[in-house]
Length: 419
Ligand SMILES: [Zn+2]
Image (cartoon, rainbow, N blue to C red; front, side, top):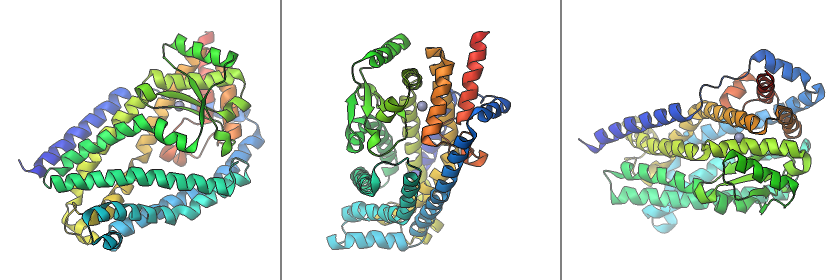
């Protein structure tokens, strides 16, 4: 069988593995609370808070969608016309057009152009966050964060580009197979090292202060059977008033992180509800499962890019002879951009199901639906979340159940527990 035949077979196998993983490991059987209960929860929220949140979200919306639309347009313009390949050539010219210079500098140049075009919309977003009092870091802090994130992306991107095009040169016929394995490995590696190498670039993490709350949280984790070495506090207040918590990392790098803003704003019972939700993620292995689906998706993407990218019409549009050239990178990036936008609703749906399971875990673990509901109200109030966002936006991009869904679920839990 030809390498192309093997690639088709591998893509089918990876897609089947991805679907089987998603079907078996994502908690699909978790229908949202009835709409009537959600509307009742919405009616109980202060009307002015709901109005202000909606005003804030409406102010953010144009910048968000414009950035997505313009990002797509630029990716298509660079990838499906010879513009991008010329940019790659130009970036490699000072180095005699060496393939490594084209691969790394050309690749980064293409990504940078796409980033710079959407920069005004990022600034627009920041100005809205400032106007509504959510941002605390000022323009200099915002710019510093932006530069840091460019630097981090450039380092990771340069390594990935150099690795990818080295593999292509070493194995011109089977690079897609090694590339797929490499992409999957990179996803696992990143999930492992991000909390220790990248997150500290943006925030300082300190172990939670000794005291009754910390003791209570560690006890909660022990009762849950989730070994937690520590609860870390992130100095999120340096850039935002928003409250949040998360789990990240794998094995020895796994951690539960709470924002310092959360500790400042919420009652101990509410913080406990948040941490119980995060323990749910840890107990159900949501980070490893997410890493696994991400790794399978990345491997499938590389094989699909090889197959799609070899198509004559696409190559002609991009003005290149072969998908294996660094000059074809803008075309690959355009395909990845389209795939990301198309798959966003599926990823959001999977995320919402996983989040709903963590909520159910928190309710069962704490047995305190009242604190859970109070926490949801506070979260929505401070973060100016639309408690019941427009349906289309929810379906396309909501990674969490809406506030009214979460409150309705807590009330359903309370009813069931009281029975
Ligand atoms: Zn969560």
